[in-house]
Each structure stands twice: as C-alpha cells, then as structure tokens.
Image 1 (cartoon, rainbow, N blue to C red):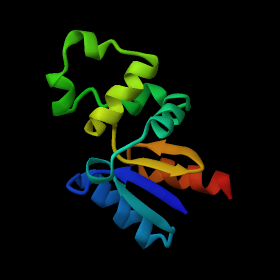
Image 2: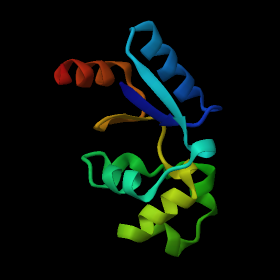
Image 3: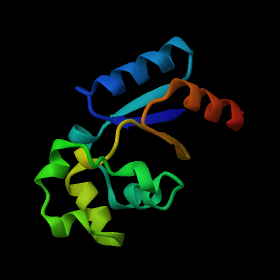
Image 4: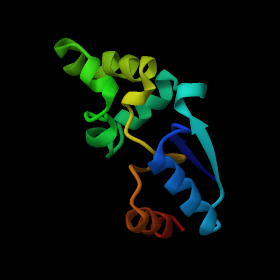
Length: 116
C-alpha cells in the first residue's frame, strides 16, 4: 500500500488521491500538518534520489525562514523539515521507499508499473 504524505487542504494532494482511487491503487493519506513527520522518515527521504526536490522552496514557510535556515544541511535540515512539515514538497508517495515527490500522473504510473 502506498502512503501519500501531504496536506489536506492541498489541491495537488486532492488530485493525486483522486487519481489513485480512480486507478484502483491502494493508498492511505498522512497529513503532515496534523500527524507530523519524524526524523527517521525525513532522513530516509533526504537520502533518496528525490532529495533535491524534497524542500519546497516556493512555499510560504520557505519565505519566512532566515538565510541561515535556508542553508541548513544534514541533521539540522532534517529537524527543520520535522519542525516545519509544510516545507516538504507535496505529495510524497512512499511504498517502502520514496516513489515520487510531486504529482505527475504519467511519472507516477511509470514508477508504479516498474515496481510491479
């Protein structure tokens, strides 16, 4: 089963969840604003091939960070994302490992077919 990490109010997350349902793909939703994130999960994500796109540098939260916070790496970046989960680009699709970050139906379908 795929876990979709995102925010309930996010239009892209809504589209992704609807698409998964329409394609009969089992999934569960994890609202990062309500349920939060933990250091281990974020560390795994930052060590994946999606690390470069994981931080949403267009978010309102990003714009409120200090220049020093925007330069954080390693465990300090992990803690920043745990403390401010809205900094994570949404949605994040996980099935044991990160499958995709952001919603592109074509790319997600390709990843899902490759994993079967």
